[in-house]
Length: 483
Ligand code: NAD
Image (cartoon, rainbow, N blue to C red):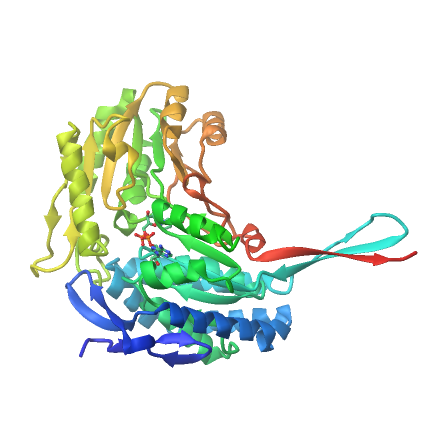
């Protein structure tokens, strides 16, 4: 028996096995042990979840006032807060991230997200439109219906909440499919939703593989929208499949975000920002500042400081509250990242720090040293492809326009950072960068009230903030003849 035993699907307010009692293992990447067996949903299970969600829309949930939906969302946040230690531990257990990140950053942010959107539930107003004396026209903001949220393994609960909270606030019923590697906190969210009294079928949690459960969701004609975060190639496939039923799609995809250090920056702060930008969350962060552009004038000094700081970061037991660098989320991801290190070396990049698998004295776990490469040129693979691990590619630039051109030379456009003391330059560069988020003299900061999402092949649609609600409502214009 595993530590957490067997976990079932949440469909229509009830826990049930997948068809055929099929399961999949959940591995703790820090110990390589199987910690749970989780139901692996079939297309038939997805059908059942869609039917349950539809029934919720046609029943108690669909009738509920916005204010009452908001109350339930708020209560769900309170319940999650009561369980925050347990849920944070689960997040670290299946993902390998340091417990300090789960407990003090990501799970609290997920709870804030619920409570922020709780406040919006009774404020989704339409408008009246003055078309003349002979008609009265008003608009209604209505839910889309059954909405699916498909999320990856890097921020399992938080990225689920960015979708589930606005979707529920707007009155949709939700089917949440977590990544197969990290289903535990989505299941805890489902449990808490039942505990606080969400009507059956309002939030269904369907665990399973992307190729079976995920694919069945995207194909399903009873689902109105898929909100997806994950790999760019998966996102393209989802968009193609969704076209068959003309589902709405929002996509939060990969990134290769530039972090630009000008010579006039506070270099100590920029070194800290560059390391947080790439090593927070082990670099498994869609917005990671994985392309660092350093002004030629300060390059040598900056890279010395950066390498020294990176070498001081040591991987540790993710459950230890002092650990700042945890385990890579899976064996296959570790292998992928190490392959990129080899490719970088073979293409002539200079290794300044790290580059190796490491261990924490247990001989187990998928740990990796924080890795920094110098002398990277724009055409090298590590300057172009998303690695999704603790590997930083550093490049140089000459003047402001050169920095902008190099930063924008990517298929991606999720985020960017700028380090300078010159206010005019900072805002000028921010206006020119092709990215959905630009951080000036900071990096990797988020707030639930601030929209987040991509330009270019980093996707479309915005999560968080008021804008997120647009992705979960549709407008109805009503004409009344007054003649
Ligand atoms: P992935 O695309 O392999 O998987 C993401 C989710 O999609 C999982 O739940 C998976 O089971 C499911 N899935 C896979 N194939 C599917 C299919 N054919 N149909 C439906 N669902 C399917 O991505 P991943 O490896 O889990 O996550 C890492 C990627 O996510 C990185 O590329 C990263 O940049 C990106 N990411 C982006 C953001 C963002 O906000 N833009 C945030 C986090 C991660």
